[in-house]
Image (cartoon, rainbow, N blue to C red):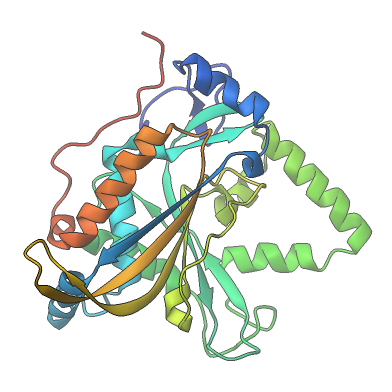
Length: 305
């Protein structure tokens, strides 16, 4: 099941989302006095104890999910949160707020860990009822297409659809590329971007996650791209051991990880973002919840009463 499945388009809707028609006055006005994403960035940081999560991953790798990683669990936690706080899956274009009709997450995939290795991107689509095994399968269906035996995107004979699109655009002369990008941005603004481009674009995802910890760095606040409909960009930091005093004054030792997010304030209000991030934290602290479908799926209410 995907968001707004079966809903018919009305005047003002886009092919990638439905116009939110029941906004309160402040939410209605925000995109006009904050017309760009850079006007509306909100930064969020959380440090989460992953001692139990690491043990969970180690256990699941033995039998059910041999390729399970921290990346998979974080993706699954965000997908589950979208099924419970659907307002997080909204975006703003042309000063209007829309509710997305799919759940799509994006990530960078390196074609190796060398200085000359180039990057690809994947944007797997998810369903509202997906469990952790479902999320792992959908991500691996995308990463399995990437040939890591060659470090060059252009030289790769098995390019992904995204790689083909970026290679084609990259071959255009600079003066013509500027015209092409003007056309792409204009059509996207009015909801008529060619679907072939939209389908492979990571800039039109529900969320984008980068794993800085995989290269030994701490997380960063990564900008939300001005182009496209992306409203949430998260970064995963490296793991760190820590010691602190618990409520009884005794030393507690564990492993934790820092998550940092940049979000578009105009897409939904701070209370809903807080609900969402608290839920992500809860799921990472108790990841076994992700092994079964959500008990209840909430749907974004976007129509006037």
